[in-house]
Length: 435
Image 1 (cartoon, rainbow, N blue to C red):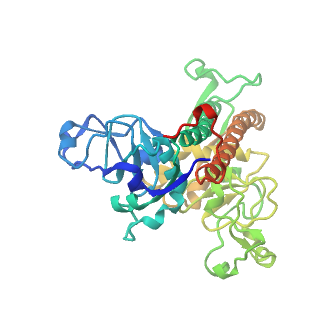
Image 2: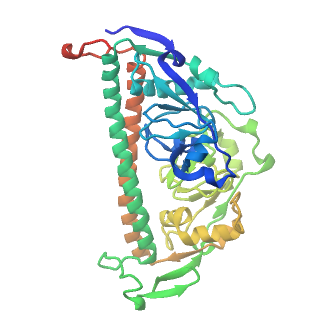
Image 3: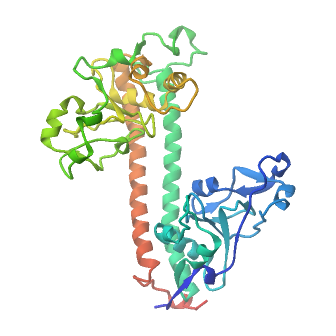
């Protein structure tokens, strides 16, 4: 078993150098051929960086503290997305929010990447406690790092983790592919519909006689356009938000009981069933008008505005909140999941919300905005065909997403074992040569 060395980032790297940002108001500094790495690029990247949003000219590079990183190094974020490492695969320059770490001979580039990624949750303690907690070059150098003395041992650990990462990235690429397919499919289904034989209608350009012009655009003949309010179920409180003010005070929440939903439970086409707030049975009975029903459509109206999902059929009891609009639809008129998809994605729904906000940022949704939203409504039979296709592609995405989460948990466990020396990694005799 290889000896493990306890050291610091400063001791296992030859150089630690941050970048700089040319003056944004000088056009000649930007638009050249030198990739310029910002925190946004770090946040969006996985293990490796091979593209950037911005580019510098030679003049921009030479007129600032930015410098050209010619070979692969660890690019480590010190501001905003704190403590995230990536490896540049292209020559580039960075902003001052990123420090480039050139590894010493004692440690492998990818091994240091994995160690920095592993310890990232604890890096906050090294930040400067100012208005915005950031790292600086001095604090980065002081971050503790441990590693096997044998570089062969390091390489074996990297190969194991690389294998899991490759599986994660492959599955994430598949999910992205399915999401693109779903977006195109749902657009076609809601603008062309499905014929009784299961085929999409010909496009309007090919068969204009099959379409009609409406307030929300061209839709198939035989479809209706209805205000959302007209599709609600004939029950009390079919659209609701609350409770408000003194109706439910913070101290009345309990540690266990009936879930009290918030924006953290409502995601785009996904209901998150990890509950954090509860009320007791007496309080639930008092606020029964705000209860959610299975297959209600719920949309966030504060915070992250406009995320929408359907309440699962197996959620028997739960209470809505003032941060949500909860809607109960008439099953004889519309399938809830199809309303939900439109609220999340449809161009006509997004255009209506933008118009209601008068082009500004959507910071809330009024009940009148929702009630007056006009939606295309096929027959229930055609909705069922659309819904079946929606379920097929959505199920594929859910299955692959579950696989990604499984792989990430596997990786987390492996990192805990392999990057602490907790579990020894066998090294074949023909590879057992210390670096």
